[in-house]
Length: 164
Image 1: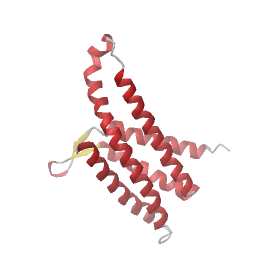
Image 2: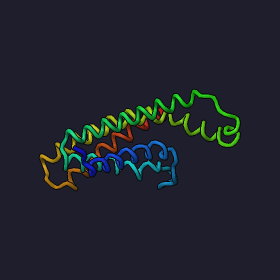
Image 3: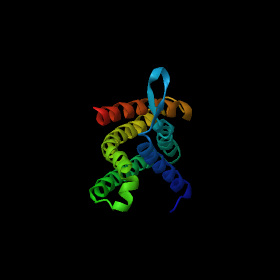
């Protein structure tokens, strides 16, 4: 049976996942001369979505969302690798070639880091969310706790792989 709400939620989830991966290479000034990836605007959407899906549809559906996101990232990464191997047409290379190559050659390494970070942090988010539900029935509390832990893991895994 087709569930349009679940389909819409999966669309938002996958879109936020791709936005965080593609747009996340841009950084903005942050506190004390540091810089922050604009992915911070999309990562909370990713994590809260699995929590909402878990709350409404259960743990198995949350895991399916994570698996769907992982497959989407793998497909994108393989597609990126494939298209990078194709030669450029001179008509477009002169106009955008250097910028495209700079962005998407970086995106290969970022995508690999994102794959590992995503898989680890999202599954941990689901596990922590459902463990926290045994302690508190308040969605805000359980979601916040699971998001803090999983986003910290996501950041640590991603930064280690992408910039090591």
